[in-house]
Image (cartoon, rainbow, N blue to C red; front, side, top):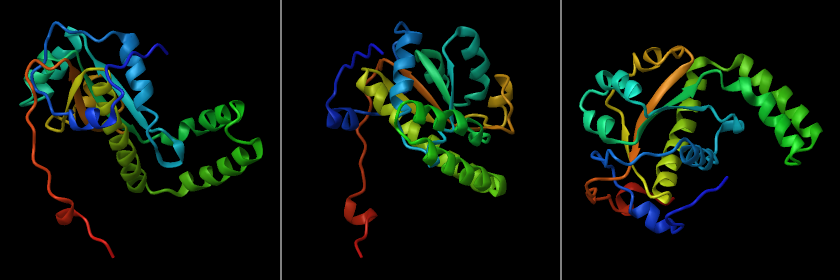
Length: 212
């Protein structure tokens, strides 16, 4: 992975992140660099390391044309960004556990006997897990990776905007995905900002936290 970061200063990345709505439409992100960004973002944690996040990178004119009617009041982001990443959470999150845990054994991260014991327990767990509980879990996991994706993009010199205002009922089917399996989480526009983002006020810690 040949990652070239614009900055590795975490405070600069975090405090310099703003939601951007208008991008330079001439700036494109290559598939190779987008792959690096996603690979770095997916170091985020997830329940039992199931990694239920799934990404649809919409960067072609045809893809954006499909997305535009679903994006409601967010047309500027769709039209000017380098790409819009549709983040989904996979209800079939247990399907990849065998691959994940087997690879962990192969890489020396986990002994075989630990893998066998955990897989047995996890399969029993998922067999009786209510769908709603699973849905709530994978949405949390997908939220974690989405935030990490925005910070990773910033480290690469790009800006983002998390978008919740779109047609979640139609997004999966519009792009040929199983809507019962893939739960829409958010859209993330990504590109080079054409306008500076606005600073925003944050509530003081005294308001939002308690010590007991």
